[in-house]
Image 1 (spheres, one colour):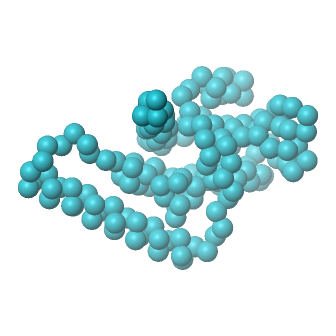
Image 2: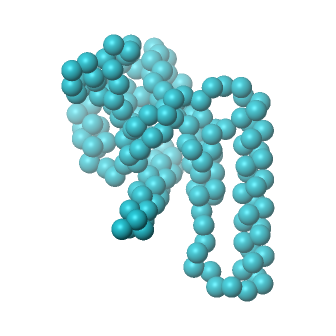
Image 3: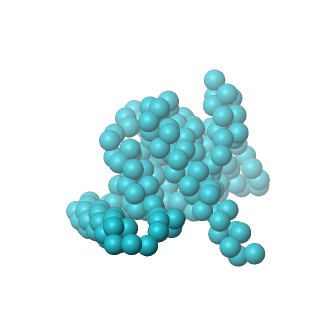
Length: 182
């Protein structure tokens, strides 16, 4: 079963880049909570921009309302960051999609725990860190280095779709930036 999950992870479009993540090995991983879906919904709201709208007073009013809503979200998130007092995990280069998360690290700093969770902090919503229960697959990728792949426990259809939308938007943004620099 792990081989099929690993194949699905490798074959699916993924976010590749720096992301604040942390592996937490545990005999009893947490359950998925509502903050996960909220984090992806807010990331989508904050990242949304409308470039195709024509000019006019109604469009300007709508733009101001969207801007006001984003500012309210930012203030709410800032309040949560200040209230939580938790340190964010370190940013590291990862590959992330609805099936799992992969990263590389020195073998000497890793404590093997086959079950646990991945703590993720999206750049768009740092006030809503979340954890996804996972099973760990580890491969040696070089001298003194290992590649870790945390395969998520089955997610709800809505959450898997939200993650894939986030991943697709990040991929589309990266392609647009690449085309813009040529």
